[in-house]
Length: 186
Image 1 (tube, rainbow, N blue to C red):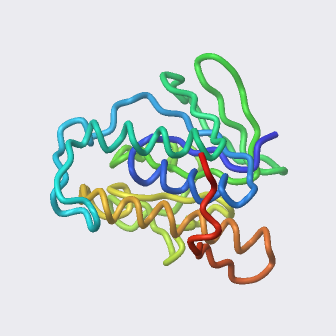
Image 2: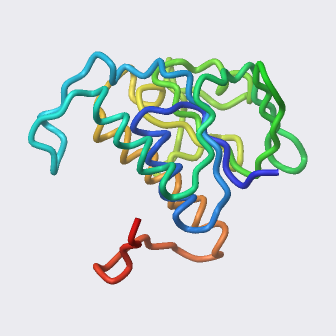
């Protein structure tokens, strides 16, 4: 059983995975490489002057791999179900159980619908931490923002979801703040 299953490998999913794995939660990402980042160029992302979306995704993937995330690239998720112990994720290749699930599939709400998440119109209804009406299930990015595709906002959504997961695990508000001496030598 893994701690966190992330469905989607764009900015939201990779951000969530980075935070959770970095802070000790076993995390797996399912990435079919269909992120809209392949059509983007970032020059409005804070801290980045100009980079192609494809290059950004490759750097982000490398960063999460360096932190120990299991990145199942090309492994499509077929279903996500809520169980008594968390979530059951079925892919074309295997089945996985997780304590938490983060949905980061752009504006595709298929898995939120499967889980029975509440909707507000066409978007998945979430609280400020990105948690859905289904406990321990999080939705991020365009599926909660009526198709708004913005990489930095999506990455923030993923970070917010991850921090809430980490807060639940710690039993108190969790802060992910590093200082220069915390930086691992990779």
